[in-house]
Amino acid sequence: MTVETVTTEPATTELPTRRRRLPGPIEQKALELLLRTISKRYGALQWFLEVMPPGVADTFSRARALRAARDAARHVPAYRDFLESRAIDPNRIGALDELPETDKASYIDAYSLPDRCLGGRLPLIGTTIDESSGSTGTPYNWVRGDVERQHVRRMIAFFARYTFGDQPLVVLNTFSMGAWATGMTMAIALEKRGLVKATGPDLDKVLNTIQQLGSGYRYLLVGYPPFIKVLLDEGERRGIDWSAHDIHCLLGGEGNSEALRDYLRRRFASVYSGYGVTDVEIGLAAETPSSIGLRRLALERTDVAEALFGEAGRSPMVFQYNPFFHHIETNANRELLFTVARHGTISPKVRYNPHDEGGVLRDDEVRERLASVGVRLDDVAPRNGRRLIRMPYLYVFGRKDSTVSVMGANIYPEDVESAIYAEPELARRILSFQLSLLEETPGETRPRLAIQLLDEEPSEELRKRIATAITERVRSFNRDYRETFGEYPALMPFVVELHRRGEGPFEGSDRRIKFRYVARA
Figure 1: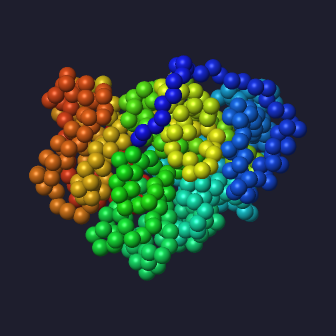
Figure 2 (figure 1 turned 90 degrees about the vertical axis):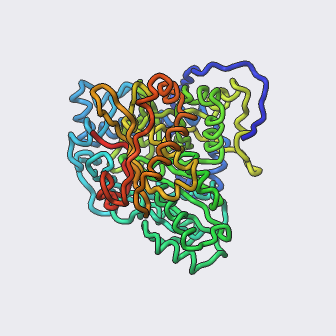
Figure 3 (figure 1 turned 180 degrees about the horizontal axis):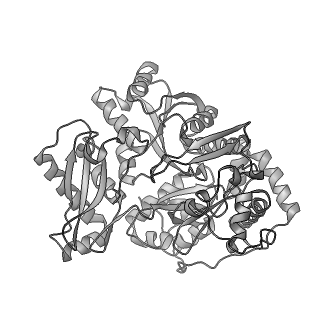
């Protein structure tokens, strides 16, 4: 990526916290009325997000989050008890950052679902239940009311139009149907962007639909990154000429590397991703041209990565989000805390910690940090004749436990994914992988990688080829791994095991909606 540099005085990485007087009740009511009006119209909402000063947006976001916390303390029995049990008076909440965090262990597991709802009751009319994937071990139920579902759908539709353009789309929603949050919600939300067919993750249905409708439409494939990758490969096997179709992708449910984006962009016109936490809401944030540009530039330049994210060893996904609907903070461990800051939430979330690691940067903070390394934000991504939306940026490294550590060097699933997709011929043969540790001699651990092949028999030749390719690729871009490799060359090469589809550690994976990339002990 080529960007224009500017001469400027270096800015410090840590910017001073900007605090404004919180807006009063009248100002907040005026904003509420404005948001209700403009959120229903794409052009009005885009204009609002383009011109709203970041400092003002941040101030209103904190004020709305504080109001949501006070309302929860008054009307949600579980949250009131949660505060009282920690010697906090629910009637005297002075500031948001004075409140304790909530998470599954401290709040969700401790209280019943009705007690976590407004008035201590589970509404039976106009309410739906989403079930999380259970990737952490236990599926959970999350209730959504009609008002909050409408908010989520509007923001999903907004981001889809902002990234994929105004022209109608044929949307093929490949997310798993049923109780999962992504399935029906995405299908209904994207009805505003065109014709929707909810195929679920069925290769035959998706490919047959594309073949029957032909190349005269703009398609949007929506689904989990691994499925979209398999879909592309299977289409090529069946002789589909992807280049004859105008196909775009919206990924979600889990992270993706830039290597995977590049792999998909060989055939598809554009690839964007969304970020959500089923515990809180889906559609929390989305990639935009500028957020992707920032991520890719940070991959190329360590000075940019360190200025934006405080480190250069990992590549977080970067999104933008609406601060008037969600207030996002970080704690001392760099974990993200979410407060749903708008009205209509049946089961409020206040400073909820899903244990995702990352951070938040305002638009003006991003510009200052880029200026410190001689870059302008407006040159990072094509503007296509429009102003950039000034929504804050959310960067996400992923779950803090999604890593393995070998002789002090952290290896992340994204490292392996990037290595796989750097070799397209190998990537076509691999369905998924799982990282773990191998300790053959006490105190000597090695990185172990189980590979699930798509549709072929394991062979020693293929195993050696994959092991060599991944080891060398990870050495090339993971600095810690490279340095530790020089100190312990016998322990650092990946020990690769090949498995047929659905066998070994991948047995039963077809019954889960997400892959597990790090094996549990």
